[in-house]
Length: 197
Image (cartoon, rainbow, N blue to C red):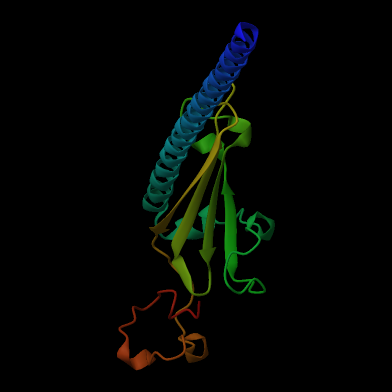
C-alpha cells in the first residue's frame, strides 16, 4: 500500500513538474514574441520617420527649384521624366499616357543619417493633362547596416501644388472636363487650361 502511495505521489509530482515547465516555456515564448514584435514596430517607426524626413527635404528642394528658375522651371525640372519611372498603375486608367514620372536624383538631397543610399528613392508623379500643377512625391527608404533594424523599409507620400507655365494661349473647349461650363469658370491667360493641357 505504501509502495502504491509513493508511486502515485511520484507520478503526480512528475506531471505537475512537466506542466509547470511547459507553462514556463510557453510564457517565455510569448514574451520573446512580444519583444520581437515591439522591436519590429520600433524599426518600422524609425524607417517611417526617415522616409518622412527625406520626403520633406524633397518637397523643399522642389519648391526652391521652382522659385529660383521662374517660368522655365517646369520644363527644366521634368526634362528627365521617363515613362518607365511610373508605377504600374498611376491612375484608374492605366492605358492613359498623360502621366509624367521622374526619379529625383539623390545627389541633390542630403540623406538623413541611417538611410541606405543604394535603397532610397524619391519619385515624382503628375497627371500632365488633368492636374499638372499637382505633383505626388513618394519617398522610400531602407535602414542601413549601422542601424539595429537594418533592412527595415518605409514609404511616405504627399501631394505638392506647383506653379505651371504652359506654352500657348489658345483655349480648346474639347479638352475641358465634362460637366463644367468653361464660361462659368474664371480662366487666366497662359495657364494650363487655356493651353489645352
